[in-house]
Image (cartoon, rainbow, N blue to C red):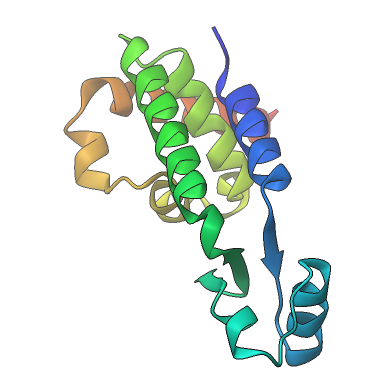
Length: 147
């Protein structure tokens, strides 16, 4: 079974290999368009590009494939979470990875981690598997910090 870190790395590599463009100013936008063989000054070329989020762009012809990929990623994560019947395996790894990534050892705040994973505190507390995994991950981080 694939662990959380491996799942995330595999999915991130797939996203990295996807033909997305990033531009945060006009010069970068023009360079991105040129890399795609398009002209940023031509309306017909501009019509082929869509903004995804905060400086990320995609060719309209690739939107369906991008949505399909992200939906598959979400299904893969949901399936791995569902397979962890106790919360002590994949779910624990998930929370440990994200707590470390969001500096829980320093902040002792779970809010950023839960936001990144799309959970509310009430959802985690109300789900015994999620609660177990989160508590186990917090205990591990506290143990490391106190050592």
